[in-house]
Length: 374
Image 1 (tube, helix red, strand yellow):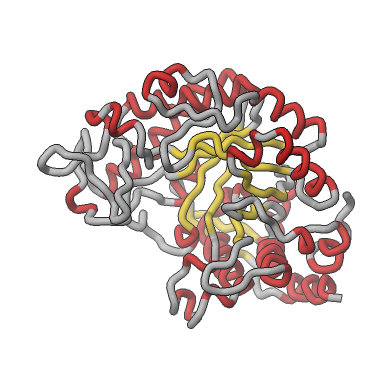
Image 2 (image 1 turned 45 degrees about the vertical axis):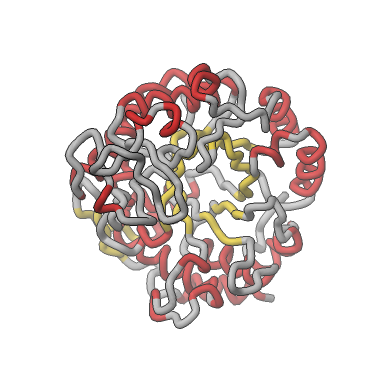
C-alpha cells in the first residue's frame, strides 16, 4: 500500500527527529521536527476546498456541494466574500453599498452559514484586500496612482487600492467585521500585497514606498486588523505566494512569510505547481512534479520558520493548467504536505469542480493517513 511507503519515507527522512536551523523575525532558534510535529498536532486539522461566492450562496448548489463533502474527508470551506474584481458578495456592509461594490451572490449569508455548520463543515471567509476594480473608480484618491495622477493599471488592466491608506484598511475591516458578526470563525486575507503584474516602477502611493516600508506596512495592517476583530475572537489568516516559503526576501510585493506568520494565526502559501517557472527547484517542468514542488517548498519553510511553521495550511492545485491534474496529482500534493509534518491544506479549483475520487475516506486511508477516522 502507498500509505506504507509514505510512512517509511517519513521515518527515513533526513529531517525526521533531527534538529533543523530555523529563523524567525524575532530570533534564531532550533527546533527538532519532533517538536514541530507536536506543534502541528495542537492545531485544528483543516482539509478544505475553496468555493466561489455563487457556489456557496446558491441554496441548490450548496446542497449539492454539502452532499459531496459529507462523503469525503473535507471538513472546511473557504468562501469568497470579496473578490479581485472588488465585488463584496454579502449584504450589510454600508460602504460596499455606498461604493457600488455589493453584488448579491450570497443574499442570505446566515442561512448559508447554518447549512454548512449543521453539516459539520467549518466556513472561512476569504477577503481580497488590495486588488480592486470598483473602489478606485468610486474613490480615485484611494487608488494606486501613476506619476501623472491617473489610475495605475496592471498588464491586464486591473487596478489596485493603496495599501498604505487607513481608509482602505477600514473598508476591508468593515467587511471582515461583518463576516465575524455573521459567525465566520476565521477571516482569510488574500492579495495582502503590492502590485506585481505590470510596470510597478510607475506605482505611486500615499506614503514613501520601499522594501522595508512595504513589509512593515503589511505587518501593521495585521496589527490593526487584530485590534478591530478582537471582540469577535476570530482567527486571522493570510494568503501568500507559494515561493515565499523559499525566497528569503519580500519578492518585491511586501510578503515576508516570517513577518506575516508572526502577525496571523494561519498562513496559506499558494503552492500550485503550475505557478512555478520551469527550472524552479531544478525541475524542468514543476507542473508535472506536484509531489516534488510541495515537498521542496515546505522543507524550505520548515528550515526557516521555527514554531510558526505549524501555522502553514498550503493551498494545493486541483485544476489543470498546462498539465492534466486528476486524482494522482491531487493525492501527491496532499502526501507531500503530510510528509512534511503538516495536517492541514486547502484545494483550489476556480469552478468548484473537485477531484472527489482523491478525497474519499478510503483513498485518504490508503494513500495519506492509515489512521484517518471520518
